[in-house]
Length: 212
Picture (cartoon, rainbow, N blue to C red):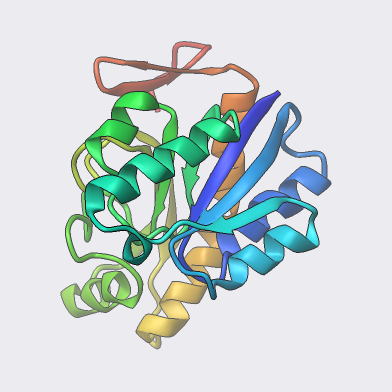
């Protein structure tokens, strides 16, 4: 059984998509062991508790140094016997020591087609504001493995979403979530739980040898 710890900062809609997919039998062989947030008021923690999942806050402000925070977070991941770390709207940078502890075992979902509109400062509505400002006709979402850079790890899955002439940043954000993010993240976890994923030379391959 693949044990997931989901890291969140806000409402947890991507977490809910994972839980819904699990309840629908779409992710056999995986379970959410815990949900951890840097924000004690994150509604995502309440979502977890409603499903009987361990939920806690591990926040940088509660520690004397960033290094102490990183050690505490790693300790909690290890406590829950985490096999896969899932960043589902987690707005804290994952430090190198956690990346090293979970090589190619940390997933992130980003609301654009990487390498477009990604990197430092590109999160939340800003991603969609910049996409509309640039005038792109297609945007989407990307699931990728996390390395020590920002949105630079191996790309796992992507899904395109059409940009409409009447779109606002908020309407585009909502549609990217509904049409791409909430589908991609459960699909990626299901593939990992089935043991179908390998990462070679920075590329993600399925067990049929097809590069993703």
